[in-house]
Amino acid sequence: MAIIFPFKGLLPPVEKVEAVSAVPYDVVNREEAAAKAAQNPLSFLRVSRSEIEMPEDQNPYTADVYEKALANFARLKDEAGLAFDDNASLYVYKLIAGDHEQTGLVCAAAVDDYDNNVIKKHEKTRQQKEDDRTAHTIAIRAHSGPVFLLYRDQEAIDEVIGQIQQDAPLFDFTAEDGVQHILWPCTGDPAEKLVALFATVESTYVADGHHRAKSASRTREAMRSENPNHDGSEAYNRFLAVLFPASQLNILPYNRTVADLNGLSRDEFLEKVKANFSICEAGAEAVAVGDIRMYIDSTWYQLSFTGTTASDAVADQLDVSILQANLLGPILGIDDPRTSNRIDFIGGIHGTARLEELVNSSKAAVAFSMYPTTVEQLIGISDNDEIMPPKSTWFEPKLRDGLVIHCF
Image (cartoon, rainbow, N blue to C red):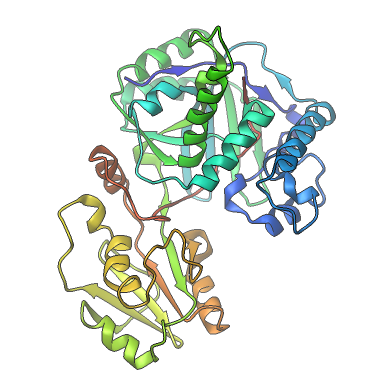
């Protein structure tokens, strides 16, 4: 059963919510974060990526960066007028991006659910990123970026969430990227109903935010070790999450570029590719699972796998897994895509034009575009305790940091 809690969110005032809330810390690099915050002293990026206010050669993983985050958080509370909600609440959170809409529930999720695999995972975390977010969370004593969770649709939950949306929202603004963000507080009887309904949900699934979830677990361990009176009721036993029904998710591909052909000529490379893939010239867009597109030397090709996969595991059937096991690893020498500096990952929001740009400018030698991983594949992999290759999914639209903050 999924345990969720209302909480007193730390919120920006209505007139400053657009300025304060920001893109997630991990979808922008330092330069991009600095550019977004340049003309906005209230941007939450000054807390989540506090190194942007330090010298460009600053190591982002040192104690002074986290001290800066705490100082900036204190300043933001004062200058923006952040204030705690009067009541412990759940929050209904709707995002509208073009024709796509999705509506979720902001809550405090139980760290115990994460540790006990009620909240299921599909991705390995990296030690450095774990360490970073754990240190950041402990420094500011808050979870400011929500973990994106999904659950199998339940009509009863939809009905309650739909009723809440009949009231006037607390926030309704359109961010600089054109995504509309709408938030309703949920207290009293509707909140109690939702807590009870989610208690009947057997499992939830991390869609995005594995490192934030893992850092919440590590934060709880650190705080518990320092508290001789720990009894499990403390706020650090919970973390900020947004729960969305699976049917509403919008998953885009996570594409790849590789810097070089591993010492091969173009013709040698294509000949090796043909050992496990049929290959023909085609358009840029993959149209179904099993359809991989490759761009090299100003030409798009369709690759169709003709070999056999290593096992029957769901994760091994993913296009990203097939590409890694049969081309990126054995032909291009990308043995560990988590650590190789010869591979780059391009979120599907940038489209195939970005892949063409990188190859045409010789910043990459070859690019690969794939059909998105499906929600069913994600759930199947998580249920089987399998692991996806890194950068297998890109979710749009992105949730905002600093919109609702869970403090402890």
